[in-house]
Length: 264
Image (cartoon, rainbow, N blue to C red; front, side):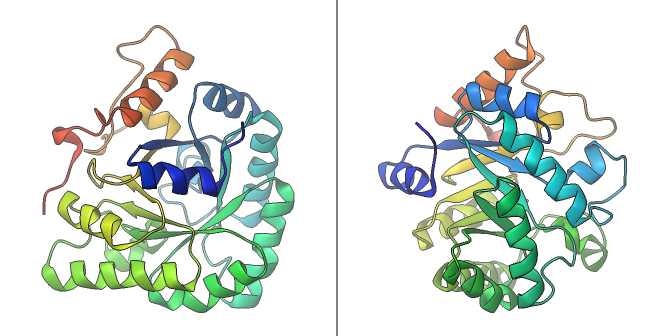
């Protein structure tokens, strides 16, 4: 049976964790979905892991539409979430046009990075039938404003603002909140503060779901590995087994462990 937003809401209500993983093509989409991963994210991370860029900023709508279409063809029941790339939702009109393209390509929802300034955009998308995931914390499209990839929400003021933003974006219509690189105690507070399912990456084990970049969890990403990454291929015999082990570890809440977590 296909995973929907209602599926994720029900899992949150039951206290059962769900898994998400990036995919960018038809073959991996089929492997990931058949391994039991609930959500496939076509991330603009493809700019780094597929294209070799040092950030996600060069990714275009054309890239995202193409990869979303590929994933949709291979998917076997996972919910498909597609990133809206840098400056593709700078205005409400742009957001509506570009989200429509991603939904036509096969996405079931779109993901936007930002804080309370996205309220009008999320409301407009939601009113027009486009489900939205609001991405808070370390938002890679803002890397130049942040001055690098840094944990967010470490001081009290920033933490309280993030909780408020999550509540505001949910009120505007956000169906999912995604938290990246935030201290685990803050992620737990946000997960309790909103009714929407919360997905974490580097946000501790108390969120409703977890997401990783496919290449990271297979241990093939070159260079320094983020703290929140675990190589699931290291202890398994194949890629499908590694992905299934990831989904199982998330569901059983054995991943992320203490060593994958930011405290404050």
